[in-house]
Length: 282
Image 1 (cartoon, rainbow, N blue to C red):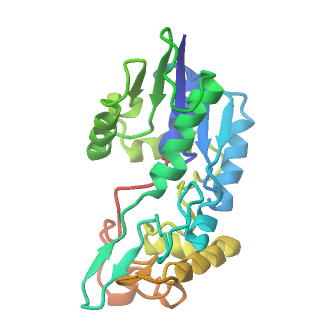
Image 2 (image 1 turned 180 degrees about the horizontal axis):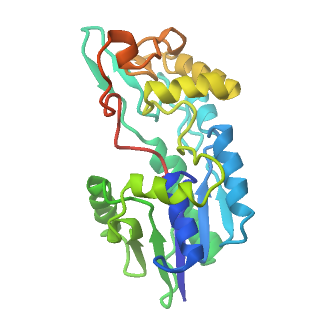
């Protein structure tokens, strides 16, 4: 019993895979696509997800571990365990320490709110086994990831994680195999999708360029208000060794100068400033 399952982030790469599999030329069809909902995505992602679901392709299964921002506000982890004495922040917030040094909080949100709920759904809803129990001996779970040819480090990390899984569970990277970069996916989607494909990430994800923060502020007022709220939550609680912020400038989000670098300094923006290599579920 073989099942091909797409980790659907509803961003550029996974959308390209979803549509390419529907074409059936270069990507083998999926039995199901699973979207792990942090309940904190921008409105454009949910609209895009509805559009994908309307195409009559593989069924889209939406799962969730809860509302990520609420866990942050309660000082809890993904299981609702309250961390006594300090505020639990699982997102990769930027930290400004008392001595002036800066750092980054360890990212746990992807594992807790993306990876784990998808794997739980695969066990319980796709193969019908309980949490922690092995898949049937005749089962083969093929998880397909939308990691592209310009993401070798992420491909290696995922492959290493799957080495610890049983032989009934494996991972594939069709975009990598086809040597398709993210920009190749963008060009493909321009011909297939009647609207801009959004980047899949929480509204308060710290891995945003100024352009993305500005777009959120101007086009998604509810999302911006939520980001400002969570930015304030990052600095609440006891036992903090440094102040935490969503923006790399380490100032409260409403006070950040969101103009691009060339606008602020008169120097050309070469395109890689404020970039990061991580975008959740995409």
